[in-house]
Length: 185
Length: 308
Image (cartoon, rainbow over the protein chains, first blue to last red):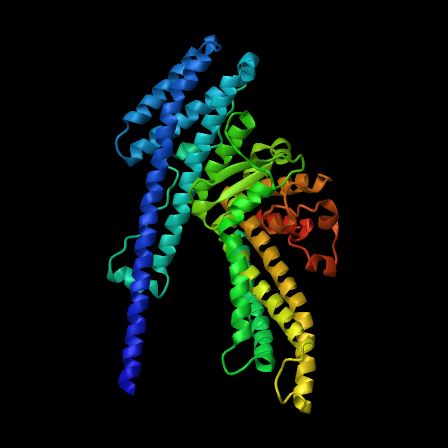
């Protein structure tokens, strides 16, 4: 009789262990996938920017410098090597785009142009998508970390050496500062 | 309570309500089979369960097509700026939720409303009315879409199908029992006193059970509405946008005639309109598919750490 109870207990434990292991693997893959999704959105932004600059070039004759900065920042971001450098360049590109959008206020014909509105919407959406992709990555990385650290799955995690997932953080301290809006003409 | 605490509470309450529902069904079924049934196998309960399941499964698999056809929804093409914005806003939230992009539709109704349908995130559709598209800003539209995607991600359509099965079973059982009583079918020893007492008790139960079951179903629907609100806040991290959107939707006077009432639990607000949503008080709230607006806003304000 005691043997049967013991066997049942071992079977239940094994089943749980398999379930816990599979869940950790599942979450780990979701984390990797989430990270790649951010890249997808970043690539999308690269393709949209030259389009925007060409559309507004004709209207913004006095802003050649800002337009040049945007293209320069975009090319640097494309050419970046490694995660840290890429994050830095992406942040600079976001800054350059922000300055360009702020300048739109000076050009009423530009704001009325349907093409420009469409492109601005597309670029705003792309910026949002990058942010949401990072948010999703952090959410899924947190879920994985919780599963990795809580008892009893932490037994399985340590046994099979599941590494903690790093949360996406602000790379550049400057991004934390409130952006200065220059309203001088 | 913040977003995470509210979500945990919603999930717990759903579980309790479903457990209560199963208990009511079990009590009713046990009584029915004990009195009217033959032998040990609960024939009546199983039969009722099968019939209700059959009905509900039709709804489960074809429900989205039926819903979209009934509301005369047309697919979104992205040809106008507003449609383009709707597509972008939905894509953004789909990324935040980690689900594939749902199919988008527009319902030709000037009253603002939206609903979600589809049996899983892979087969999901969201429809918004023309009124909603015109009335809301980008952020507010995104908050409403996030609420609908919340319904999809939380498998609410599946849950409400389960609730429909339970409700259907209760109604069928109660109906069977009333007919059987009418025709004088029942246990041979039913003349004994104890059995008469039990019969009376069970009769009361069979009249009250459908009402109780309906109330539990409505309670589940309301719970999932709160959950979808909290999911919207989680996905957008912007509960205030949903507050503004709900206020604008509530202020619109006409009911949404294009959306059938059977879809009410999937909508952002009850399509019957202002008169239903404004009523407060214990009894009117009990029969509603959606919680009263001021309570939803209160919950959202707490999520935004704006305690009143």
